[in-house]
Image (tube, rainbow, N blue to C red):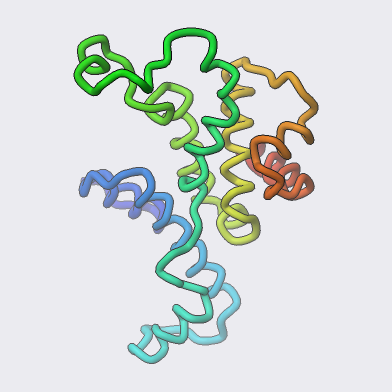
Length: 186
Protein backbone atom coordinates (compact mmCIF):
# COMPACT_ATOMS: atom_id res chain seq x y z
CA UNK A 1 0.00 0.00 0.00
CA UNK A 2 1.34 3.48 -0.82
CA UNK A 3 2.40 5.67 2.10
CA UNK A 4 0.48 8.95 2.58
CA UNK A 5 2.62 12.05 2.05
CA UNK A 6 0.81 14.34 4.49
CA UNK A 7 -2.03 14.36 7.05
CA UNK A 8 -4.61 15.08 4.35
CA UNK A 9 -3.52 12.11 2.24
CA UNK A 10 -3.65 9.94 5.37
CA UNK A 11 -7.16 11.21 6.14
CA UNK A 12 -8.26 10.55 2.55
CA UNK A 13 -6.87 7.03 2.68
CA UNK A 14 -8.49 6.22 6.01
CA UNK A 15 -11.84 7.59 4.82
CA UNK A 16 -11.63 5.34 1.76
CA UNK A 17 -10.61 2.28 3.77
CA UNK A 18 -13.36 2.85 6.33
CA UNK A 19 -15.83 3.97 3.63
CA UNK A 20 -16.74 7.10 5.54
CA UNK A 21 -19.37 9.50 4.19
CA UNK A 22 -18.39 12.87 2.75
CA UNK A 23 -19.73 14.69 5.81
CA UNK A 24 -17.33 12.81 8.10
CA UNK A 25 -14.38 13.45 5.80
CA UNK A 26 -15.20 17.16 5.61
CA UNK A 27 -15.40 17.39 9.39
CA UNK A 28 -12.05 15.61 9.76
CA UNK A 29 -10.46 18.21 7.45
CA UNK A 30 -11.93 21.01 9.55
CA UNK A 31 -10.53 19.48 12.74
CA UNK A 32 -7.17 18.87 11.08
CA UNK A 33 -6.99 22.50 9.94
CA UNK A 34 -7.94 23.70 13.42
CA UNK A 35 -5.15 21.57 14.85
CA UNK A 36 -2.67 22.93 12.30
CA UNK A 37 -3.72 26.49 13.16
CA UNK A 38 -3.02 25.77 16.83
CA UNK A 39 0.22 23.94 16.09
CA UNK A 40 1.52 26.79 13.92
CA UNK A 41 0.89 29.36 16.66
CA UNK A 42 1.84 27.20 19.65
CA UNK A 43 5.19 27.43 21.47
CA UNK A 44 5.09 23.85 22.75
CA UNK A 45 6.27 20.77 20.94
CA UNK A 46 6.34 17.05 21.58
CA UNK A 47 3.61 14.64 22.65
CA UNK A 48 0.70 15.98 24.67
CA UNK A 49 -0.51 14.62 27.98
CA UNK A 50 -4.24 14.41 28.70
CA UNK A 51 -4.28 17.83 30.42
CA UNK A 52 -2.58 19.50 27.45
CA UNK A 53 -4.97 17.73 25.08
CA UNK A 54 -7.99 19.10 26.93
CA UNK A 55 -6.49 22.62 26.82
CA UNK A 56 -5.82 22.14 23.11
CA UNK A 57 -9.41 21.15 22.50
CA UNK A 58 -10.67 24.23 24.34
CA UNK A 59 -8.28 26.60 22.56
CA UNK A 60 -9.16 25.18 19.17
CA UNK A 61 -12.84 25.48 19.91
CA UNK A 62 -13.34 21.75 19.47
CA UNK A 63 -16.91 21.82 20.53
CA UNK A 64 -17.91 18.45 19.29
CA UNK A 65 -20.25 20.31 17.02
CA UNK A 66 -18.44 22.51 14.51
CA UNK A 67 -20.41 23.87 11.58
CA UNK A 68 -19.50 22.32 8.25
CA UNK A 69 -20.34 23.49 4.74
CA UNK A 70 -22.01 20.10 4.27
CA UNK A 71 -24.80 21.14 6.65
CA UNK A 72 -25.89 23.99 4.41
CA UNK A 73 -25.53 22.44 0.96
CA UNK A 74 -28.92 20.74 0.79
CA UNK A 75 -30.84 23.85 1.78
CA UNK A 76 -28.84 26.11 -0.54
CA UNK A 77 -29.18 23.68 -3.46
CA UNK A 78 -32.95 23.56 -3.01
CA UNK A 79 -33.19 27.35 -2.88
CA UNK A 80 -30.87 27.81 -5.86
CA UNK A 81 -32.76 25.27 -7.96
CA UNK A 82 -36.32 26.05 -6.84
CA UNK A 83 -37.23 27.63 -10.19
CA UNK A 84 -36.56 24.31 -11.93
CA UNK A 85 -39.18 22.49 -9.83
CA UNK A 86 -41.97 23.74 -12.03
CA UNK A 87 -40.18 22.63 -15.20
CA UNK A 88 -41.30 19.03 -15.01
CA UNK A 89 -42.40 16.16 -12.82
CA UNK A 90 -42.24 16.58 -9.03
CA UNK A 91 -40.11 13.55 -8.20
CA UNK A 92 -40.19 14.27 -4.47
CA UNK A 93 -43.75 12.96 -4.38
CA UNK A 94 -42.68 9.58 -5.79
CA UNK A 95 -42.24 6.69 -3.37
CA UNK A 96 -38.90 4.93 -3.02
CA UNK A 97 -39.94 1.99 -5.21
CA UNK A 98 -40.99 4.25 -8.08
CA UNK A 99 -37.69 6.16 -7.87
CA UNK A 100 -35.69 2.93 -7.86
CA UNK A 101 -37.70 1.46 -10.74
CA UNK A 102 -37.07 4.46 -13.01
CA UNK A 103 -33.61 5.32 -11.69
CA UNK A 104 -34.63 8.68 -10.26
CA UNK A 105 -32.22 10.25 -7.76
CA UNK A 106 -33.48 10.27 -4.19
CA UNK A 107 -33.26 14.01 -3.47
CA UNK A 108 -31.40 16.95 -4.92
CA UNK A 109 -28.10 16.01 -3.26
CA UNK A 110 -28.05 12.71 -5.16
CA UNK A 111 -28.19 14.46 -8.54
CA UNK A 112 -25.02 15.15 -10.48
CA UNK A 113 -25.00 18.79 -9.36
CA UNK A 114 -25.55 17.73 -5.74
CA UNK A 115 -22.68 15.23 -5.87
CA UNK A 116 -20.44 17.88 -7.42
CA UNK A 117 -21.36 20.28 -4.61
CA UNK A 118 -20.53 17.66 -1.97
CA UNK A 119 -17.19 16.91 -3.62
CA UNK A 120 -16.24 20.56 -3.87
CA UNK A 121 -17.34 21.23 -0.26
CA UNK A 122 -15.15 18.39 1.01
CA UNK A 123 -12.21 19.79 -0.97
CA UNK A 124 -12.92 23.27 0.45
CA UNK A 125 -12.64 21.84 3.97
CA UNK A 126 -9.05 20.83 3.14
CA UNK A 127 -8.13 24.49 2.74
CA UNK A 128 -6.60 25.99 5.86
CA UNK A 129 -8.05 29.42 5.01
CA UNK A 130 -11.56 28.22 4.21
CA UNK A 131 -11.74 25.91 7.24
CA UNK A 132 -10.45 28.46 9.74
CA UNK A 133 -11.24 31.95 8.52
CA UNK A 134 -14.72 31.84 6.97
CA UNK A 135 -18.17 30.75 8.17
CA UNK A 136 -19.26 27.34 6.89
CA UNK A 137 -22.43 28.77 5.36
CA UNK A 138 -20.37 31.19 3.24
CA UNK A 139 -18.21 28.35 1.93
CA UNK A 140 -21.31 26.26 1.18
CA UNK A 141 -23.04 29.04 -0.73
CA UNK A 142 -19.91 29.73 -2.74
CA UNK A 143 -19.63 26.01 -3.54
CA UNK A 144 -23.19 25.97 -4.91
CA UNK A 145 -22.55 29.14 -6.92
CA UNK A 146 -19.32 27.79 -8.42
CA UNK A 147 -20.82 24.40 -9.30
CA UNK A 148 -23.76 26.06 -11.04
CA UNK A 149 -21.31 28.29 -12.89
CA UNK A 150 -19.10 25.31 -13.84
CA UNK A 151 -22.14 23.48 -15.19
CA UNK A 152 -22.91 26.40 -17.49
CA UNK A 153 -25.92 27.59 -15.50
CA UNK A 154 -26.30 31.29 -14.88
CA UNK A 155 -28.38 33.04 -12.33
CA UNK A 156 -31.01 35.48 -13.56
CA UNK A 157 -30.33 38.18 -10.96
CA UNK A 158 -27.33 40.13 -9.72
CA UNK A 159 -24.91 38.02 -7.65
CA UNK A 160 -25.52 40.17 -4.55
CA UNK A 161 -29.26 39.60 -4.82
CA UNK A 162 -28.73 35.85 -5.34
CA UNK A 163 -26.49 35.68 -2.24
CA UNK A 164 -29.14 37.52 -0.21
CA UNK A 165 -31.93 35.30 -1.49
CA UNK A 166 -30.32 31.86 -1.38
CA UNK A 167 -28.28 32.65 1.74
CA UNK A 168 -31.31 34.16 3.53
CA UNK A 169 -29.34 37.28 4.36
CA UNK A 170 -26.92 35.29 6.55
CA UNK A 171 -23.92 35.36 4.20
CA UNK A 172 -21.64 38.38 4.09
CA UNK A 173 -21.05 39.47 0.49
CA UNK A 174 -17.42 40.47 1.08
CA UNK A 175 -16.69 37.08 2.66
CA UNK A 176 -18.41 35.39 -0.28
CA UNK A 177 -16.19 37.28 -2.73
CA UNK A 178 -13.04 36.32 -0.79
CA UNK A 179 -14.06 32.65 -0.60
CA UNK A 180 -14.82 32.72 -4.31
CA UNK A 181 -11.31 34.05 -5.08
CA UNK A 182 -9.64 31.46 -2.84
CA UNK A 183 -11.66 28.62 -4.36
CA UNK A 184 -10.88 29.73 -7.90
CA UNK A 185 -7.16 29.34 -7.13
CA UNK A 186 -7.55 25.76 -5.93
